[in-house]
Image 1 (cartoon, rainbow, N blue to C red):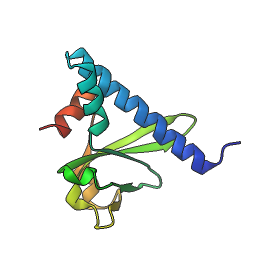
Image 2: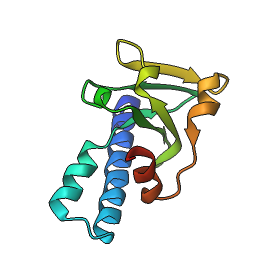
Image 3: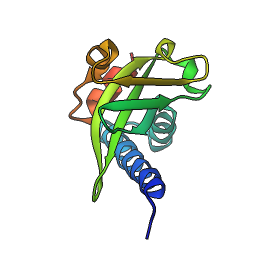
Length: 128
């Protein structure tokens, strides 16, 4: 049996793969060259974390710090991995140790939560 920590890793891995593939396919449908679409998709400032108890903790790395904003994707672990929500965060919101923790009661929750229904909306948020 797979332990909960492994389920969390697998959930994030699956959601990441599916989300990036959706973005990649959308770029191709718009006529973007395959190699450029691959490069762009892999370079997007998107981070993932398991959501739970109405609290979130996201971590960025130094490569993401070169962007102004990051799309933080909350994943819940059920029978299948499901996207629980999207947050558009400034990299300035992250601590010097590259993480951020907030809850549904924090002002950052309501100011950063965004509704996303398509890969096009992700691209529009992140590429300006």
